[in-house]
Amino acid sequence: MHLTDGFDRTFQYLRLSVTDACNFRCSYCLPEGFKKCGSPPPLSRDELRRAARAFVSLGLRKIRLTGGEPTIRPDFDDIVADIRTVGGLKKLALTTNGYRLHERVERWHGLGLNAINVSLDSLNREAFRRITGHDRCHEVLHGIHRALEAGFSDVKINVVYMKDINDHEVADFIALTKTLPVSIRFIELMETGDHAAFFRNHHISTDVIADRLKTLGWAPTIKAADSGPANEFMHTNHAGRIGLIAPYSKDFCKSCNRLRFSSQGNLHLCLFGNFGIPLRDYLQSDEQFEELRERLISAVRSKDANHQLAFGNAGMTRNLSAIGG
Image (cartoon, rainbow, N blue to C red; front, side, top):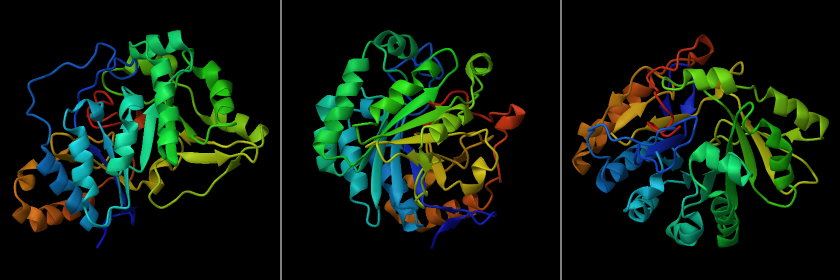
């Protein structure tokens, strides 16, 4: 049995948020830092395990742990171990800002993490500090190298592509793939409710990078069924790859294969949807397994065909930390 919507899209990929808190202050997400707003505590380990089990039983093969910054949860290692035990799960991935990555990545590999995405919006120390509010550029780069040394074969670097902030660093990131077997993913800046003005000032299409890659001899690759939204390019003379995530491009939503589950237990059918479907009440006991599955099947059938970003509608997404980006 699989989760399929009314447009014949089948979902094999879940972004599971374990917290909406973050310890960075990225200019495009939480420039003033994370602020608690009196919401209930995030899903417990048992609730997360039950959610993962239900999704995997319905055909999802890849789960990505997200936040906020997921690794700031003191029980993060236990969460990894719990979800890794879910039968049928093919890949367990993590998206992180790289905080203390170099200290913990070997343990995570041993616990069963298969893939890591690391946010790194600049290779310049001062620019990194201005974007994130932290002087940790060298630390994050060190963590990426440690991930490769630990045995991770799937390491991606996420770069939010911003005009007049880091668009001049594209060549530097491309050069990084010459010898480093990673995928650099340039993510087009997306408008959110809290940052409309920032978007207007700094949005730039990744088409600029696509044109550049073609002139440099990069060729597009074929997507795997459980891959993310990036269109990847490879070059015979480079160990790594380049990926482009362009949510404003034509037909971006046509191949959507991912769902989002917030740290409060809400199912989000789209990052920029107008509502989340509350399902936490169905995560309180293992005996609720079948009822939760039925709710998921029914909810996914109601997924819309497209987001409305092109019309300036970011839905209920106030910032990308809220439901894992």
